[in-house]
Image (tube, rainbow, N blue to C red):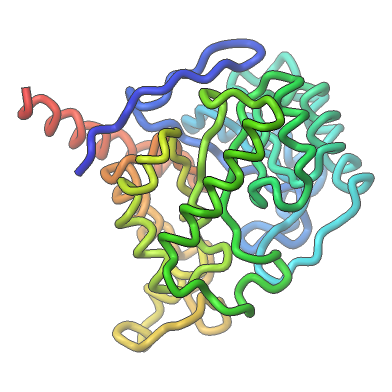
Length: 305
């Protein structure tokens, strides 16, 4: 297992150290159709209440998204995205103690969200959807998360999967990093995410988790999001174990809210293989998982001295 590198991010309000311990990114979906909790926090009141609950549970970062990018989703306009986001961002500004990451594919939404208090940008398209996001990150001097997604949300689980997933993800992330740096984003402000579940087969999701040390060689902090995802639903479904699974699907799988222990296993693996940030829905439970996994890393480091 690799030794996790230390990185330092510059946020508008503070510095953020990555690698001394695993940071938890709590998920807040202000959407009617997200795969796991769509509609649950759609009203501003419930979203704001959940944001504070995630902070209390141990989240280090709050990732707010108002557009679902689940498989088969078609997207919404920037106007609708901001209509959902702005009341929540305005209510949390100056009150929430942890930094907010804005999960969006649109430069116009990111610009306004950062102006309303967000301190990081999380682009699941890796600048494919709107390269202007990099310019916003550079101008605003906020960290930029670049995720790998093969295809678009509407078709990513229907189109052909890559023959060599590690090569596909590595090449895609390198291209995203080049775009970001060309637009002025500092190397030290870029975080990469292999995009578990985004245009990958069942087997490929597990392969990427095992190959995280290889992705770490790109020289950027790693963010990994496995929380409640469809490949875990397939893994945990009686009768599907041992069968050939070529696609991640939720049609015959354990529902998202029953994937807690599967998530815990993959969060542990992600940390031991080098993840700096894990993006999760169940923050209190995953905080315990991360604490134990971090101690395993520390024990290994102490033995190596």
